[in-house]
Length: 173
Image 1 (cartoon, rainbow, N blue to C red):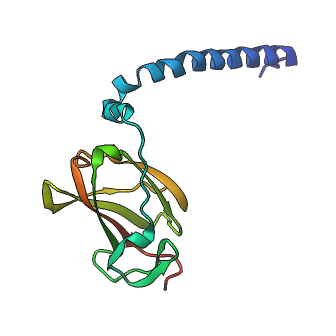
Image 2 (image 1 turned 45 degrees about the horizontal axis):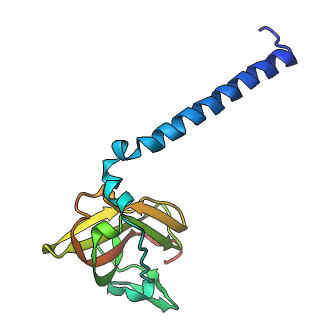
């Protein structure tokens, strides 16, 4: 194994850092310039101004529920209802809005762990008998974001939202 001097090491490190800076200076503006070409699903969203809406947990009605309640503006689930294939809780909220106005979901879930699946369900005005859904990506406890445009069914007028929790709550038994 050959020895490298400190001076040679520092020259190699400086060259690598310079290459990294040049790459970032070229690639980041190129990506931003090509964003709508690379991600056509966001084209409509870029032309609209953001109109965030807040739905607190207290605005959801428990449909399937083991135990819990409302604390302040939050829905608290302390036990899931027994079910097959997994224990579950489902909270429902009826509200009419255009899916195009809300391409992203920001959520805040305390007590979420990898063994608890969280699903967002919705019904559309054009087909109110069909439940559409997306499983939220596990982001850990607290705030997270979800790209609703991943689902081709997130379109039209939404008339109902539901959040489903499936699996096991830690410390509930």
